[in-house]
Length: 265
Image (tube, rainbow, N blue to C red):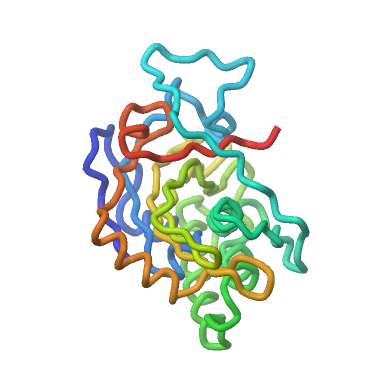
C-alpha cells in the first residue's frame, strides 16, 4: 500500500505514520492495497464533521468567497437491499452503480462498541467477489483490523478491546470520484475520500483526504470489488497518472476533473 503525502498546499499532517496506517486500514483500499493519504485539507468554509458529510451547500451554509462550484456533480444510486451484515447491496448495472458500490465499501464508522473488526469483515464479505474471499483472507482481515482497533484504543486512552469513549470516533466517506475506464461489466475509478477522527468528547476533530484506486466487475447480479479489475485499473492509472487530492470547492478539484457526490436529500 502506498502511504505518500499529497503534493498540494496544506496546513500539515494531522497524524504520524502509525495513525495514518490505522485509518487507511478502515477502508477497502487497505484490502486491495491501492490507497493513499494526503495532508490536512481545510474543507471550504471551515466545515466540521457534520458539514463535511455533504459537499453540497445547505440552506444554512454560507458560501465562502473563494468557493469554486464543482463543475461535475452526481447523485449516486442507493443499493436496492440490505444484506445480512447490514450493508447496502444490489446496485444498478451502470457505471454510477459501480461507483456507488465502491463508495459504500469505503464508507464506515468506528465508534462506541462498533470496531474496525466489525467494519472490515462487513466490507470484505459484502463487497468483495467470492472469488477473492477465503478463510485465510478472512483471518488476515481480522488480524489487521484488530491491530487497528488496538491503535485507535491507545489514541483514545482506553485499553484494547474496550469500546471507544464517548465522543471518540473515526469516520470515512467518499466525496468525489473520477472514472478511469468503463464497460458493460467492469468499471475502474479513483475515489476521493474524507477521513475524520476525534479521540474524545472535548478533543479537536482532525481529518484528511484519501485517494483510492478501485476496480469492480458485475458478478452474480451485483457489482463486486475484484483484484482482477483493480490490477487492470492500476495499469491504466500508470498511463493516465493520479488526479491530485483537493477538497470540493477548491479550484484544483475541478482542474483534476473530480465529480462531486451529491448527498441524497
